[in-house]
Structure formats: structure tokens, C-alpha cells
Amino acid sequence: MIFNSNKMNLNMVNSVPFLTFKELDKIECINHAFSTRMGGISKGIYSSMNLSFGRGDTDENVLENYRIFARAGGFEYDSLVSSQQDHNANVRVVTEKDRGVGIYKPQNMHSIDALITNDPNVTLVTHYADCTPIFLADPVKKCIGLVHSGWKGTVKQIGKATVQAMHDNFGSDPKDIVAAIGPAISKCCFEVDKPVADEFAHLDGFNTDMFIIDDKNGKYHIDLLECNRQILVSSGVRAENISISDICTRCCHDMLFSHRATNGERGGMVAMMAIKG
Image 1 (tube, rainbow, N blue to C red):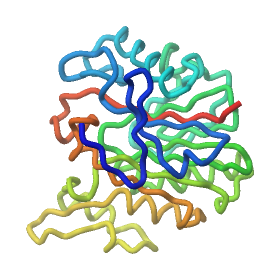
Image 2 (spheres, rainbow, N blue to C red):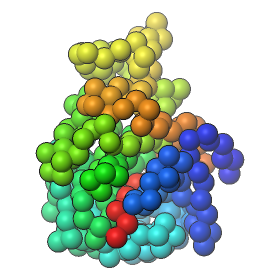
Image 3 (cartoon, rainbow, N blue to C red):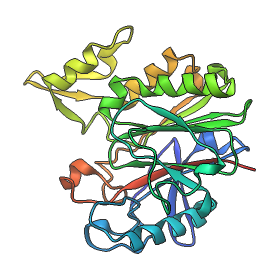
Image 4 (cartoon, helix red, strand yellow):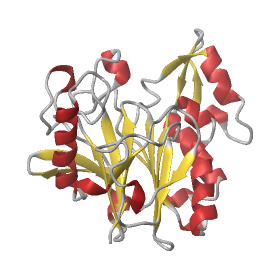
């Protein structure tokens, strides 16, 4: 595995690798991590740190992978909480009563692609295999948000909805929020047809030329990370408070699960984030 990044650190604990953002590592009140495809017990196309249920791997393997990864990342396994993502822009506040939901307890959060909390007794978990993770941390109000932003969620501006939810529920000033975007499929690999490109072109008030690249052959490349960056800035997050990953999931599919690189024959990764209590 070759790792080269100016924005992220590759950490190794008990032979389990995970990624963190250098800027988020500086915030003492939070813990965060992004998994790789290595360090777990799953086999075959799920090898080895598969953290996605319902893809054909056994639940026993996935749960053990969660235990392994949580321990390596410094999270309490019992505190994990996840939602059922479906590429919408719905945000949910989670608290201690939600511990275990979507992991070792039945799922009760449907059509939720962003989670926020100010409760140090829970760890937020969101799922990926090319889509864009967005980490949001407010060190002033000591609250966090974790966002799953696929192309549909990006067009629906789920990042903006999450910043607003942090303001409405916890009193966050967007200027205090520190954000990190990625890892995700990058503009080098995210090719789309005109109907998808048109969805991005219809976003008002943004410099679309920075995230829509016309290949002049009926195809387009979309920079999801740049689009999400502009959405966060439009929400009041300071540009200097936003870090963008320089790792493409498709280019690095030896290290990270990528839906496009494997035509869907793959496991899944997670982002985790918690307030240190």
C-alpha cells in the first residue's frame, strides 16, 4: 500500500490502519477516523475491513470488524450509532438513547444521511464506498456532524442542511465550524452523463465551472469535493476552516473500497466521529 497525502494522516493501531485529517487532529475535544479496507476479518470481495451490512458478508464478520475498528480508533463500541442512508438531505440529532442503533440494535433511522450530536456518549457512524464524507466540528459549542453526501445529496445541499441543523439545535455559529471533506471519488474518476451534470449546473449562486468539467464528448467530470466546499462556504463556514482530502477512493481502491472500481463487488467503509467526554 502506497500512501501519499498532504491533508490526511495514515494511522496504525494493532495492525489496523485508519485515516484522520491533520486539521481535525488538532481539535482536542473530538475524535474522528475514516476506515480503509484493511485490518478486518472478512474474506473475498469484502476483504478485509468490511463495515457494511447487507452486501453478502456475514453479520458476524461485520460486527467483529466494528469491534476491531472501534478499538483501534479509540471509540467505544457500545456507543456507535448509524442510520439508513438513501441519498437524501435529512439530518437527525442523536443522543445516548440511540446507542447501538444500526449496528447491534435494529435500524430505526430511515432516509437519514447526516447525523449531529452534542452528546459525548455516542459515536456517529456513516457509510461510504465513493460518496463524499463531510466531518463538521464546532469546538466552541462542542458539537459535531457527520454527513454522507453522494451526488444526489450534494445537489440537495445536505452540507448546508447539516450546518443549519447544528445552528438550530446547538447554537453553532457557522464561522466556528471546522470542516473536512473526503476521502471520496475525485474529479479524475467521477464521470457522468449530461443529465447528472445538468443537476449540478442548476445550482444557483455557485461557481459551477470549478466543479463541472465538460469533456466535449457528451460526458462530464464532477468535482464533488469542490462542490461541497462551495456549499459549506455558502452556509457560513470559513473557507480557511475547510480541509479537502487529496485521496481518490477509485484511484486508491487497493486501500479503499470503491463502488466504481469494482462494479459494486465490494465491502464498505465508515467515517466515525465522537466528542471526547
